[in-house]
Length: 112
View 1 (cartoon, helix red, strand yellow):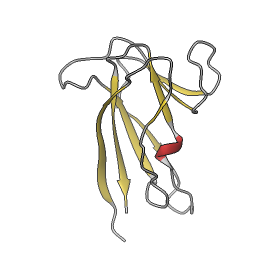
View 2 (cartoon, helix red, strand yellow):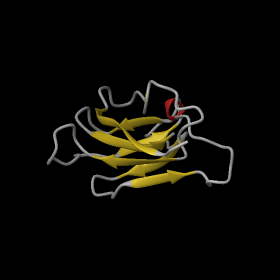
View 3 (cartoon, one colour):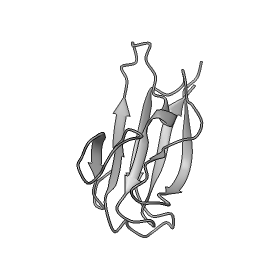
View 4 (cartoon, one colour):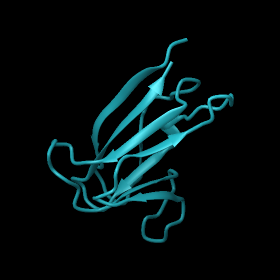
């Protein structure tokens, strides 16, 4: 199997306070590494607020279920599984929220 770069494209958090899945498509058995970059949907503009990564029930106000907070100046963040492990990420089980409805992110991953 070959490893190829994939992109989920630019995404916007449409309803702040309501976590949305990073992907509506399961990446079962294909994703060993993924990267998220905070960005607005229009290239060349920056987020005004934070992006929150976590569970479907996360609360950005209490921090419950929040795994990581990306500030507007955060560089891309990469999550990886060891190559030798039989584990893969299921991107439809990771959720994002934002401080503002116009804040967004770009997700890329290596798939098979």
